[in-house]
Length: 268
Image (cartoon, rainbow, N blue to C red; front, side, top):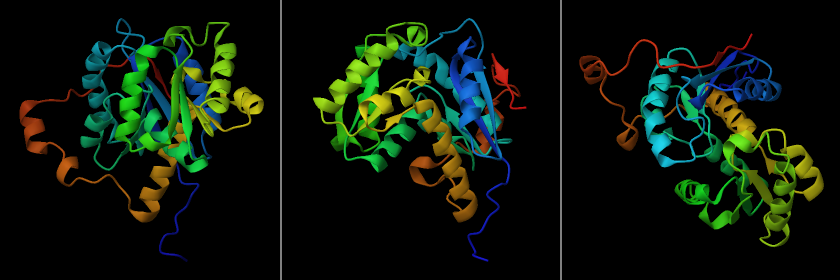
């Protein structure tokens, strides 16, 4: 038996954090995640308490969410193999990884762009509003994919209207065709986790891979857990990845026993 052999059917626990207030999309997103998981993967979903922002289109809302995300990561590191931080801005990803111990932490933009680079030479990202373009472009550049970006285009629909607007599918198709035919994108990425349910019809009509970031985040997490188990590729804790000292965390009482929670949808 190879030294790298491992039982691939071994149970894997993944937490998906919706970094926004509890809402109707939680149940729908949990269903999508569970339909895409591998056999043996358990996916729980948690959101932040009701009464806060229901989207993170503004940097102000990002700032409010980061502290709660970090608290959830610290708590999850005791019970989960991986956590996916929802939202295509990848809010708090660096901060979360610093406190995650051996738990894998990833996020939709990082996952989607990494997958896209394996499927084609160039990719385009279709976002909801032009407001999002600078933040998402910055993320892509930070991940080292600047040279592969064909374009980042907006459909003019906000996060909370993506699933309810009758124009979403038509606008995604129109802008997607522009990305492929005018910008020469070989792969398309849907630039919002609320875009679930559209990628298959777009792939069929446009003839290129179309990545759903909700699914991409989960599959990237599963891959990273498998490689950690088989090859010992756990998060680094050297130099820039050094975590805060445990003694300091305890003395300052930084983390409460239970992080602020809205919806919690366990995988039954």
